[in-house]
Image (cartoon, rainbow, N blue to C red):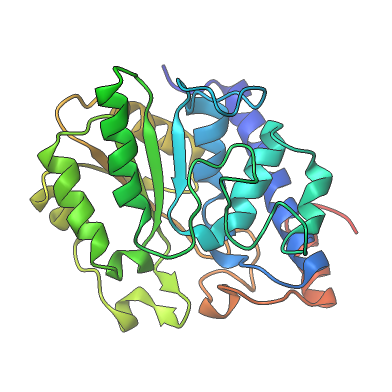
Length: 277
């Protein structure tokens, strides 16, 4: 069953709130990664508010679905998702990257409720996801493991070893999502290390492949449904996104991978997102 109009409106309101939270947080602390966080907002919203089986009151429940932000620098979107879901007070977002704060520059599973894996070093998330998916099988659990991977991160060789392992073990309870925004720290993926035809690559590795507009909530809902219906192999979702989505001067710009937001930029961004200062 697809999303109702009421549910789409609910999710759209959440995405708007999350984008403003990201901008407000990063402006306040003058550090962090806006570009790749903004590109993943709809992906995170669809997962946590429509598909994942999680409970903020029982973050360690053994039957919960697991989520790994392999691109750990997108911590701002992970944190605002967890805050909106009720894992910790939204006020805590304003302490990002401050000494003594639970919300450090990369997710920390030992300090933050709702974080299933500490991440930061790129290329490791899918390998850990393989382990979690295998664990579910061994323990006769029916949870899914979702892994969010940056497209620039696919330049790391360990990912491809993990893709081979996922196919070998036919892990249909493992779903990888590629945040395919085409831009990384120092430029475009095409200029730095072209990825070629990702669909053909993943199909050659014996994964079920689906593609969608990563900012279309209805399309994302459909591909997550399709992923969970696949019974013979793991699924990879190629979600085509825009780096810095929602803020015109950030969109598609590698300079906004990780950059402090100035006062005028902050005011412009909030206005474009429909907020007020």
